[in-house]
Length: 260
Image: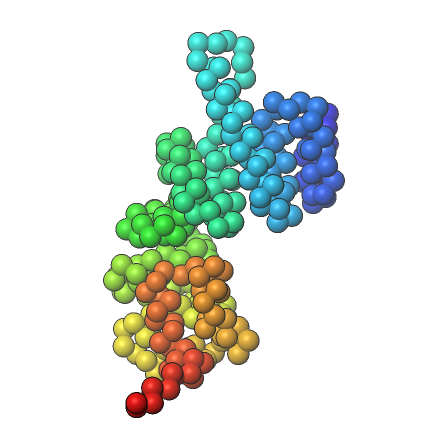
């Protein structure tokens, strides 16, 4: 009963009330897999990523136990959603500074799913990218894009920068043009476009594109923490945006050392 009511509350957007009920479910029926996984969903919605990770981990452990019990048993309800719970935990870990652990979860989710899944692939591609497996990441992004080609998604920008990292500047630009057409005023899109323009030698156009970003948003691209931890661009794109920022005067040139 509590689980049904909690799902209804979650569907109505009353996440806090749903979380309380799911928490009650896990205490009353501590081995109920979906009590833990749904509790994790409500914790994610509130930004409590560490607690969500713990809930998903409990659900994964119970689901794996269930699958072992299924071997040679009858009358046991099978946990068929292990790939989905792994996807959820992997996505949480991607956004909580645990890229190596996220990669393991998402690889496993992809294997269990056993057929192309656009959501798994775009998260797997991101995890591969963050672990500097750029060739694998490019393949995963390309497959995910082929499955969602009718609608441009923000993750296409990441795919473009992975192609740039690998030296496929034409492929990167072709993809980013479609992203810019869909999100023309997004600061990250303008910054990425400036990177690609600079990379192909069109430095004037790159400076102009970068200066289209409002000053406060543009200033973030000279902050190491923003490039490293927030947008987490590949190394080549980070180095190029540094050159662009320097060219427009956002990064001051270091004065030459005085002669001794």
